[in-house]
Image (tube, rainbow, N blue to C red; front, top):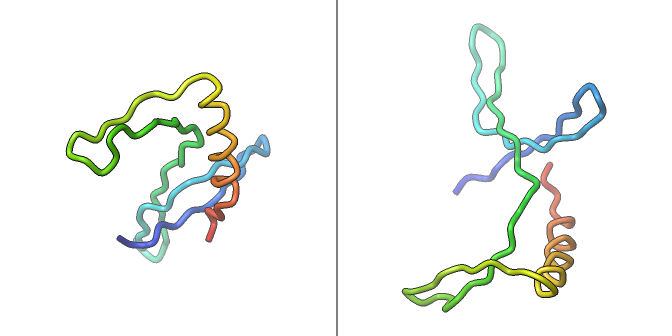
Length: 83
């Protein structure tokens, strides 16, 4: 799998949005890129029967979800998407 490239663009209101660079071309001496926004929303699911043929996922709710959100926030916050 190739390394993904990310860029952060700031709109006219000062809002930063993270994008994944999916392609780049040169046409008539100009460089163009195709980008897609990276969703900042995520869902936490629990694996049932991990690694087995009948592996599945179920929703997580309540106190379990609250605890896991903190774990994921700290892990995801440490990722440097621009590098």
